[in-house]
Image (cartoon, rainbow, N blue to C red):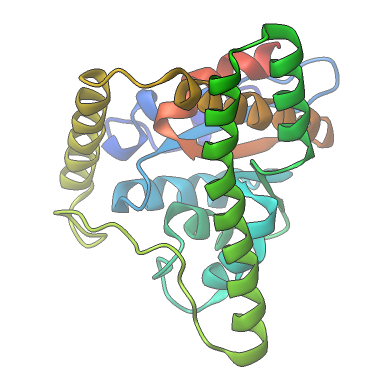
Length: 248
């Protein structure tokens, strides 16, 4: 498949598939193509785009902006009868269409993140307070991933549905027309970027995001050796991950 986006709805027929949300990295040197799908977490438009992309393309690998520790919980959300899944947002929506695709969590915490962190400290020699800030920021990520795993274990053994993340609510639903969903999704994205643009983030927060993006990109470079990859990531990570998949 030269360009997988040609198998998706065109922006003219479905504005939820506007080019801003998609990044295609062609196959090369025996590696499969990668399609990055940007999302606004929990938004109905993003849920649809994630699920429909996986359903149509049937990739060899479905990669998600989740820690691998959290995958069992989101798979359980996806395998319930709710359509779209009631919990788990666009990640569960994509998993609900995974079929024979191998599903993988590519976000921190994982061994690759530890290697990226060690390389960052060794090569950039950041101030001690910045390193401490990065570690402090990474600790809640690990804690949250462990909550996912515990919730999945309890869900499997007791059928008690635990939801560590409360789904966000928006002014549109899956029942609204695609045009209304797409318009609200872009409005949410623009609002979020305006707020971030008005705030100067501390170096440790920026560096933690950079390390997470490097971790996800490195995992994608490894996974594409198995064939085609669809990766679902937050829209704010889309460009950085795309650049890093192309090279270090």
